[in-house]
Image (spheres, rainbow, N blue to C red):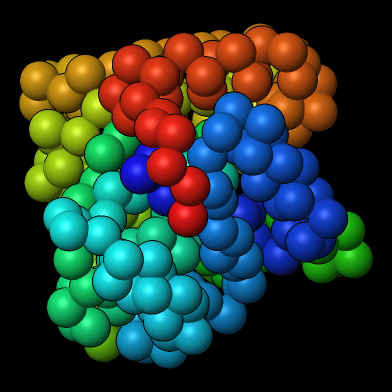
Length: 245
C-alpha cells in the first residue's frame, strides 16, 4: 500500500486552494488527506488540533499488517503546526505509523528573537490588519510582547518546537524543500538555515528554488516543476504500490 500523504495547508487557506495539492497527489497515484490550518491553532492545546482526523487515519492503519507510512506535506508555518499537533495526536491514540519522508513548502521559519510569531503571521496575511500595523516598529513590539508572554508562561515558541522535531529529532527522514527567493513572508535565509541544519544532521535533502513565486504560490506559478519535483522525490523515497486504500 502506498504511503498516505497528509497535506497540511497554510494558515486560513481556502479549501479549494489546498484541494489542488490533493488532486496533484491523486494524479501521481497517492491518496491524500487534508489537514487545514487556522490561526487559532497556534494558541490551542495540541490535543484540540485535528483530533477528529485521527479516526480517519486509524481506520486506514487498521487495514495493514505493518504500520501506516505517512508523508507530511507541510505548507508554511501553519502547516508545520498542524503536523506537529497531529503527530502528537496519533502517538497519544497509539495509531501505528511511520514517517516515510517530508515535504516543506515555504517553511519552516527558524526560531529566534526576530522570528515571526503566529500573531504577526496572521497580521501579514490579513490585508486590513496589515494596513493597521504597517509600521515596522509596531511589528517589533508585537514580537517583543509575544516573546514576553511565552517567557512568563514557560511555553516554547512553536517555531522552536518545529525546529527541534523536524530538523533535529527527525534527521533520518528524507526532506524536500520547496521555496522561493522572492518569498516575502518566510525569508530565504530562514529556509536556507533550515536546510543547512538538516544537512549538518546528515539528512537526505532535496531543494528546489522557484525563484520568482510568492509565499505558498509555487504550484500555481510553475505547476510542471512543482509536480515533477514532488514526483521525483516521492518516487525515490516513498515508492507507490498498486494496492489502493
